Length: 139
Image 1 (cartoon, rainbow, N blue to C red):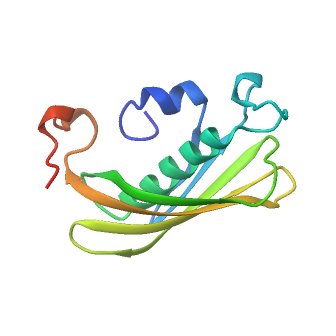
Image 2 (tube, rainbow, N blue to C red):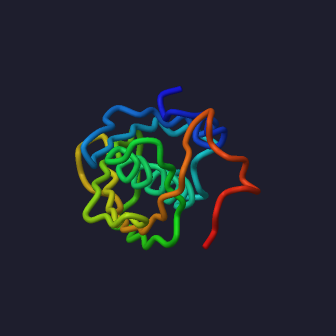
């Protein structure tokens, strides 16, 4: 389990964790035909998911045993994204309970396709020992 726990949706997409540590993450994705939109480029929802998981991984990489729940994110799409993709995430700032992050997705030529910023709430537990979703604190 490269992400430290099973994340079924991320496994379905085919995301692969390459770098995890010190407030940084890198995740690659080789989009399949079902990930494309009507213009035959990667769907924005796939890109937003890749941003989300990359930023959460960057936030978690600077903690021990904490999960990260998305509070908000903003995504800017700069150009059509064509496979394969590489997302780089960075923890910009953290407090005891919050993480402020950014991520950029690059195409096969190393050109930035989209950029996102996100805020995450740290929650106790991660992986096999994590509390069921109904028990995750939301305040």
